[in-house]
Amino acid sequence: MTTLDLPADAAPAAAPAAPEDARPPLPERKLKLGGVTREDVLTVFGALSGSLALDWLLYERVLPFSGAFGFLLCWYLSFLGGYFLLGRLQWGALLVRERLVSVVAWSSGALVVALIAEQIGYVALRGMDAARHSNFFTESMETTAALSPITSGGAIHAVVGSLEQLGLATLFAVPLGIAAAVFMSEVGGRMARPVRTLVEAMTALPSIVAGLFVLGVVIITFGFEKSGFAASLALTVMMMPIVTRAAEVVIRLVPGTLREASYALGGSQWRTVWNVVLPTARPGLVTAVVLGMARGVGETSPVLLTAGFTTQFNGNPFSDRQVSLPLFIWNYVKQPYPDMVARAFAAALTLMVVVLILFVTARVIGGRRPGDLSRRQRRREQVRRAITAGSNR
Image (cartoon, rainbow, N blue to C red; front, side):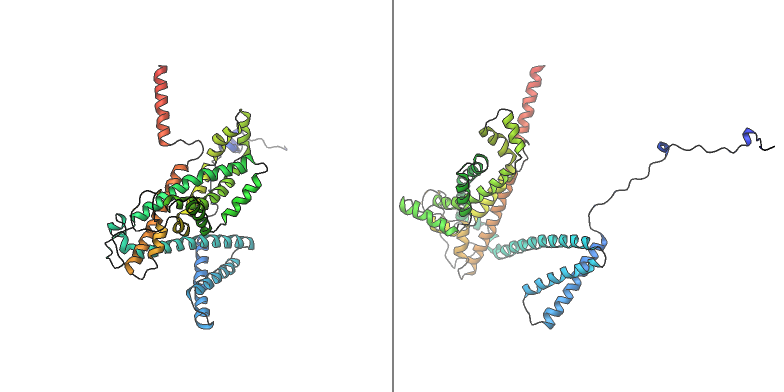
């Protein structure tokens, strides 16, 4: 008998293969891209400590060098070299170069932040003696002498003068600058190249030349008196090329397909620029305005030539002399009296705060994306929808 017949219940039961869909899924593992590992931190710390020890040994004991700046520079260069060597012992050449560039970028950003913090801290420390008294923000220097106590006099006339002059200059420079940028980027033609060349030349124009131009043309030729308005014209000359160049770059970044879609819907060139191009480039245009304001708010020589200097409060920029915060700082920081120097540093701290408020306000106003509605516009839209829904009922 060649075969063995076994009963059915005695045959080994083969386990049926489970379908693939019935198998429990494997747990998902999240892949972490980038980030900082413990090896990165230890490598940076080791390079910092080792380069500091080596720099101290060479700079203070071996080499005939001195000075804090040279010490810090040698420390930074030796840190980069040490980080490269330590990284080469752990990672490949490509990864080492990538992380070395990252360290350079992070250290450069930290250096910039540290310098800004150091400047703000130094100005605040020197000017706190005057800024902590309320009279500094409510009085002028009209009745304050060189040896008057710190509780006498203030910079309210300089604050008002700076705000009025910067406001007028912005009112003049922003429309002209954006119009010139639109002409060069959207209209073009044979005149676009000469206009661009002139704008680029005005970008490098020294501020004293702008002040002399307004002094010679507006004040001497036309007979206007020195005033905040004349100073705002000089600041306009300084701000307009900055706004124009930055606005042109931003407008050129607007995709051409948006313009083509507007033309396809029957929009004219003017409607396309006004309703498509400028709203799309609005955040960049706000940045252009901020750059122009940053150029004009700290100018001293044009204001000195066109607005003069006064210790009295003058809230009318179109009549008589008017001082600004940079001119206030320049006039009092060079005096040999400690209280006057403290007032100058307090004015510098006030100028920083004013600039910060202006920049934040500009960002809030123009920082929305194209198509985003403001809070008032959203409320108006909700009211309109409610009225429409009620009328349909």
